[in-house]
Length: 569
Image 1: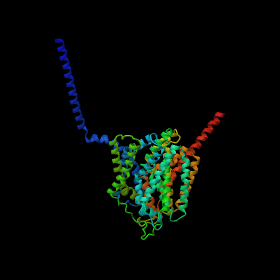
Image 2: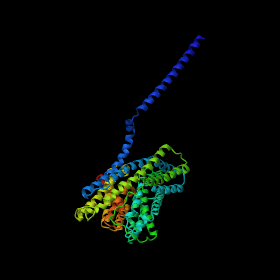
Image 3: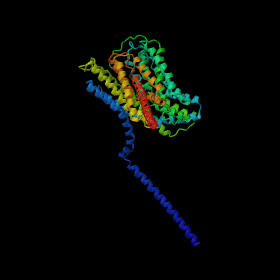
Image 4: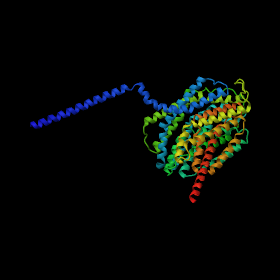
């Protein structure tokens, strides 16, 4: 008994010791937790959040500020003019930086998870018809969410009803039809692009089938003085629609379909959809221009060179526009995932956080666009003619002789296109993929430079078109005929890369700046319109990348021939 009592007492003692230890550890852990929470000072919070925000802010800062400073420095040093409303423009540029940072981060956390799930899971869980239906609606909804599409809303007052009646009517009398035509054409392009991946069609075939009727329609409209001004807008819309929302979402879906069809080994397998999304809007807008009723003659002429009120933006209207752009796309993706894929939502709080960031980012971006980038680009464009022609707004104009001034303006356009492309983050990401695909034969830095040169030369050609009021078709058709000839001679990989590089380089910063500059310049020199600069800037990298690809293939052929001769000897 005594021995059992002793053992029981020892057992109770050990239990009490364990309980005390557990209680002590709990208290210590709680006190330590309190101490950790108490030590999270604002300085520590900054150290945790600072790097996360700083990296993303720096990326957008590097993309936006150098371009804005280049415009300001060119106006001050070369044009000898000041920038009006400096504080407002600076605040607008800051809003663009913060807005892009929040918008892209929100897209990454809020919309991209849906798109990636649909792209990878849907091909194995549903029919091809349903995939094509989702692809069409996804392309349509993503177009409405593009931030650069807002740039079209501010350019209607820069067109002349008497000189470009159909263009003026399309932008001012039928803006909803214009946006719907662009959205429907992008939806159709995504549908055809997914069908191409599912059926393993060659991109060359689709380019020929799309580009030939597009160029034929361009030549037909170019023969009419009333319809010819529509061409610049039609081709520019192809660049406007391929932005930071459409491109990653449709490429993610395309990569998923390519993986389901056994082509996942090709890193560029999802490419080609962006190309079609650039060509189809041009066809849609040209057809829409032929279908709208003949515009009524202008009653009041719009004075050329007059100031445009870019500050008519309202935060509430921009907030509603942001909600209309993001929420329908989110609902579409959620319904697709829940109803057809039957996949539960993962991390709903993170997705809600991303959607909130997307809406807030688009709101800030639209405000910054209206108050910062667009006025700055338009103001610089209106001042450019002072370099070679008299201008009442610039004392002592023309500042230089005619051809020297024109050379300054063309050089400005070339550097603007080159610098905007170098700062484009999507192009850098594409360069990494291409370098891996070609085993280092086509290096990332070489790709970025060759695309930037093409965009710069295309922008310069567009400015020449506006200055001398040249027929847009006379520049565009030869450029795309040359691109078509090189396409037929190039391999499929370089065709995918070259044609999609045109869409990747036209980002949400490049589009409003170049568009506003071209329209401001066209207004100052009293051209019929200032459209077409973006279209030629998009044609440039297609030609430059295809030419580089042919050059690389020629060099490899010479190297292999030399090795063969050495082996034979």
